[in-house]
Amino acid sequence: MSSRLYVALDTPDLARARSIAHRVHNHVGGIKLGLEFFMANGRAGVREMAEIGLPIFLDLKFHDIPNTVAKAIQALRPLEPAILTIHAAGGRAMMEDAKAAAPTGTKVVAVTVLTSLDGSDLGSIGLSGDPHEHVERLADLARSAGIDGIVCSGAEVKAAHRAWPQGFFVVPGVRPADGAAGDQKRVVTPRAALDAGASILVVGRPITQAEDPDQAARAIEATL
Ligand SMILES: O=c1ccn([C@@H]2O[C@H](COP(=O)(O)O)[C@@H](O)[C@H]2O)c(=O)[nH]1
Image 1 (cartoon, rainbow, N blue to C red):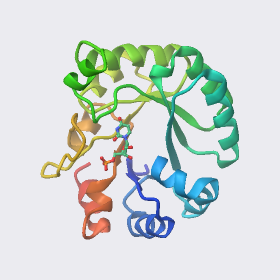
Image 2 (tube, rainbow, N blue to C red; image 1 turned 120 degrees about the vertical axis):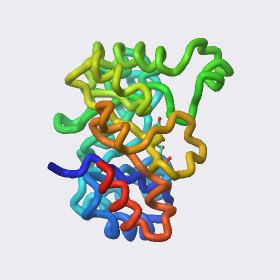
Image 3 (cartoon, rainbow, N blue to C red; image 1 turned 60 degrees about the vertical axis):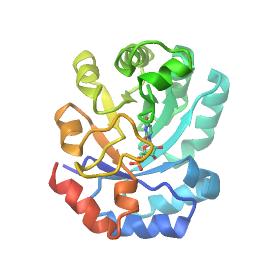
């Protein structure tokens, strides 16, 4: 079985992304490319990264009206990413149209509550209650819209998995026990996230900013 660890290559520098991917490719199951990479390198950059031979997770977190999101995903169809993201807060129709627009083999997963937010951040944007409740409600909506799964923190994945046993659960905000959280607020260890039901783990800076990314990825993999 391939590793459930995906490395987030958050850099605008294609050469650096390629170099890290080559260094860690024996210890990860896939490569996550996000806005920073895509805005700088576009579809050609994604194609170059795909040549490395690992599944590509395109994390562009679409959040717009259904027609716009569907057209954006249609434009990405030739890339055939293994996974792509939308925001669950875009609503049911947007999620349905996103799934219909995506290639058959692509998993469409919806971000519920960003792992950089805690209860007080939600309060500041007018959402009362803790992240857990919002994740459960949005996971329910995502399931009923017919998409493949959600993005949530390791703190919510157990309940989400129980409610949606066939769902695909992407867990970022993952940190080794001694790792710096940075801007992440709902953080768990890789082992805890997997035990709670994560389908894949997303780890960025603990690997990409390590002195030796290969050793950092290997150390995380050893805990799984
Ligand atoms: O809720 C979310 C959704 C996506 N992400 C993305 O995951 C990585 C995490 O990077 P780290 O360096 O390990 O913090 C990053 O690309 C985010 O855009 C997330 O963190 N939380």
